[in-house]
Image 1: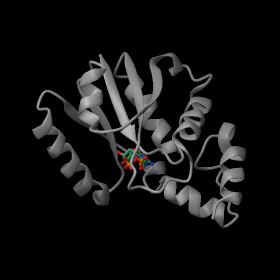
Image 2: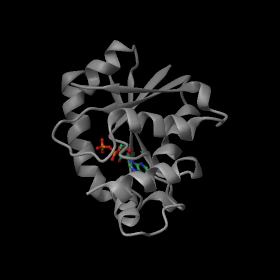
Image 3: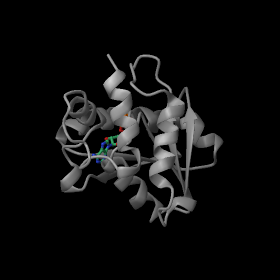
Image 4: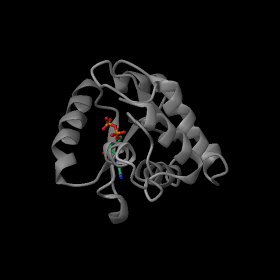
Length: 163
Ligand code: ADP
């Protein structure tokens, strides 16, 4: 069975990667879907975000079960197109719940055959978001605890030039 993990991943963090690994433990194939959202101002381009995720996956024992793609439009349409039945989302705190509930309910109405599966963040990552990583990097702080070693330099480099 396939599952789709959609998100912005701007950039991917250890929290996202933990969800990907756990999803790969449950499903035969996990498609990490970078959703194009014209209303969201992202730091990294879609291709850069894809390359960052792929760099983190390389060498992981579950890597052969994971594929990264870029999509636009309705997530449920993409999920149907690839023949998956599950959307994976992560929940860090109560603050995530309201938004996630709204999205999942909208998707349930659009496509009742597709389920949203929520995975609770590991406590060590429950405060971690792409925005936190960017804020720390922009202010010259250490981002090593939050993102894998493989992509630290790329993320730092991009943020040092970002205004
Ligand atoms: P979106 O803009 O779709 O929320 P994000 O890249 O911010 O995209 O997050 C994608 C998904 O991953 C969301 O379900 C979010 O709650 C979850 N997520 C983000 N950070 C973490 C984390 N540290 N631990 C677990 N889940 C997370």
